[in-house]
Length: 278
Image (cartoon, rainbow, N blue to C red; front, side, top):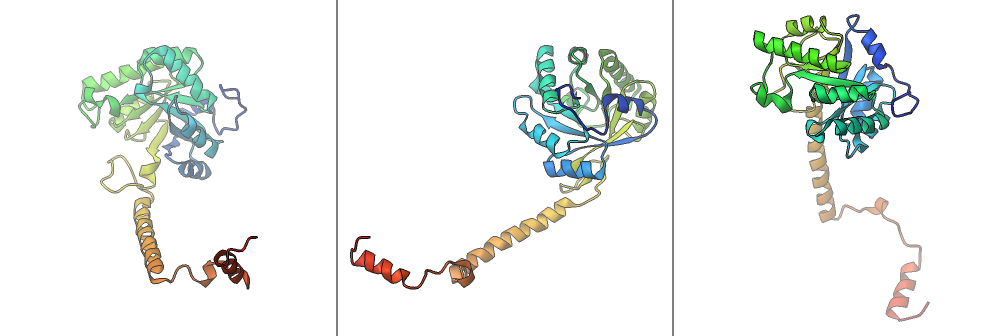
């Protein structure tokens, strides 16, 4: 049963994922559409992350319905929360909406409060894009001993605060491997090599939804961008052909219209032009 009080048929629970730490590497993605969520579940992706707005949970609920059997973490935006109490409330809203846990970019204080309330929390370490002004922008973090120790100590603080997992973003692969073996947290690697417990990549990168250049740590397994561009050409040409047909009188043709029964138009004209009452 979920914290929200619903019976669940998930592929994993938090305990399952904790028990798998160090034994296997799981797969994770973040879908941005319900079609992507359904496809990820059908393909067998182990865990999903989806964006979540506590003030408007409809999109996340739709994602939950699209992939009802996959462990799903709702990611709460950094600026959506201002206090520890708000963090708990947002966490409860997420769990009632079908989350199996929440992910945040908060510090230990908010994490501790949510964990004590029974909410499974995944933290975020390394490159945290929204906080990247403090680490020099969108670049790798942890390439100096000072940064490496800072990341490790940060993860230790999340563990002490009660988090069960941590996403580690764009740090040296060898560093994550060593850190992961020294923490109880389940580590989700994005751009941090294969030394974590979960390998995470956005669905839009896996599917090639966008044009190059691509982030270095991604791999495109499909080229949906190229397919979408070809579809857009087809859309434009379809509209142009429709315009041409209308202007030339080819549309609507005989097969596109309803013909009046015999005599109806004569009756109509007699009624209208002869001012007859019906």
